[in-house]
Image (cartoon, rainbow, N blue to C red; front, top):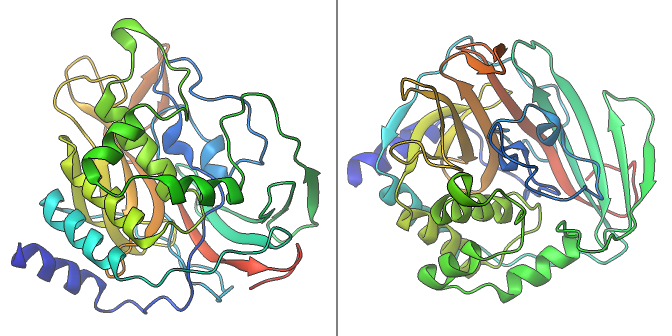
Length: 335
């Protein structure tokens, strides 16, 4: 355990400490169904972050916050070297750190959550910068892409929509159990993305638990410290959870990658080809010092072929980076 924690400290030693709390407003592309599965959710009321718009495999958008800084991010390196470590060691340490956080003040209903993302599709060099302002009560949203004009939309609730406003997420988090076993039982039956295939192709309970816990971490609304700690402890209890050091985001910065990779071909788990090789590996990414959720990444380990067509080449990746986040009083303003 000491060796793994030493590796974590060394990984983060030359990186600046975060100077503001990070917020994420919507969930990311890793929540998409695997190829051949039915859509796993109802129509979104919100503009999707770029990671939700990318390919249909279980995917990832790695996020690094430089909160309060709005300078362009450096390009990622050509190659990424990672190191696997014991998942339980890292996730239990993350829980201890999360328990020590100060509880953050809830925004007013009329305030806006701001997020600035850099997103890179496979093969892209520059990527796309998108800025989002989402009103805390979930009634409006604004979007600006690559510094262009603001676009607005009103958000009307839809019957049986499984999406939540930021304020609804805060209420949900307040009611979550803080015992890891009870939390796992809860998320296995959570209504989010419940319309998945039945029978042999049905998502397995542990895969569902990992996916829903990922939703919670990526919701963009701060969890109570004890609930966030329970999420990490629940992840530590799931068989098939893998942790790698050195997973890089779209800005080229290293973090801790957490993936769900059970043995064999499991619906809702890693995508494997006919030879049993893992086709792609999807990561949640945590800050190596604070263990805050930074985002997601997907690495294509083999050519991905759907319907006889190569949809992603071996060695390519998808990633994103949070360049800034915060709470403002109106869209167009920066934190």
